[in-house]
Image (cartoon, rainbow, N blue to C red):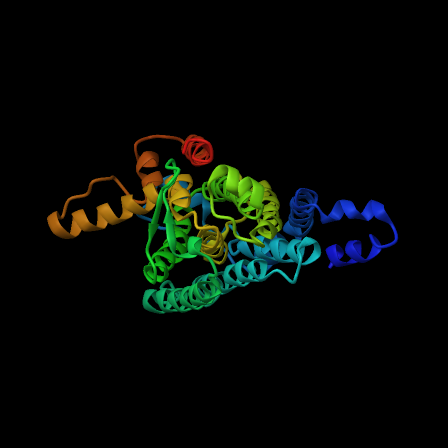
Length: 360
C-alpha cells in the first residue's frame, strides 16, 4: 500500500523513487515488523494471560521445564500479524510470488492455530489429530505446488540445482511436485520439532530466512543470477520484502521469547514459519540450500526419527530424550547454553550455504 503511494508520488516528487529499490523496502519491512511486534507484543501477552492460554509441560521431560507451565502460548499470532501488515505496506501487491508465500504461511499458521486452540483452550491434550494435521498440510502444500508447477515457463523450473557445482542441474520433470511437497511439509514439521526451548527455533528461522533472502534477491536480478550461475526467476526479488518482514517479526518475538520466555510460539508460529522457508526455497529452486542452511532442523528431525525407529525395533533409546536439544539438557547442559550453541551451529550452516554462491 505504501509502495503504491510512493510509486504514485514519484511521478511528481522524484525523491520518492528511492522506494522503488528492493533493498530500501526490504529494510523498511524489517523495521516495520520489528516495531509492530514490540508494540503489540505486551498487549498480546497480557491478553493470553488473562484468557489463561498457557502452555502445558510434559512431566517426563527435563524437570527445569516444569516451572514453565502456564506460560502464554500461541505467540506465533504476533509473528503472523507483523509479517502480514509489513508485506501489505511495503510489498508490490501485484507480485504473485509474494501472495503465494504469504497465503501459504497463513494457511499453515491456521493449522497450527487449530491445534493450539484445542490443546490450551479446549484442554484437549490430543489437539488436532495427527492424521488431520497432515491432511491439511498436504492439501495446502499440493495446491501451492501445482500452482507453481503450472507457472513454470523456463527449463530452470524442472531442474534440481546442485550447489557447489557450476553445471549442477538434474532434470526431474513432474518429480518436482514430489520434491516440493516434502520440502514444504518437511520444513514445516522440522521447525515445529525444534521449537522446544526458549528462543531455540525463532533465531535459526531468522538466520535461515536471511540466507534465503540473499538468494531471492540474486535470483530476481538477471545480471547477478547469470554471474553466479543460479536460476533467474523474474519477480522473486519481491520476496525480499517477505523475508525482511519475517526477520523483523522474528527478532521482535525473540524479545519476549528469549530465556526465560514470556510467551511461546506454539504450533501456529512454528508450522507457519517452517512452511514459509520451504515454499521460498521451492520458488527459487534452492531446496538443497535450504537443507544445508536448515541443518539444525534436519538434525532435530532425524534425532526423533532415529529415536522412534530404534525404540520400536529394539526397545532401546539412542538419545536420553528426543528431539536432540532435550538430550543435551538431560546430560546437564543449562538451557541457555543449549540454545546459544544451537544458534552458533545454525549460523555456520547458513554461511556454508552462502559459500555455494562463489564455490561452483
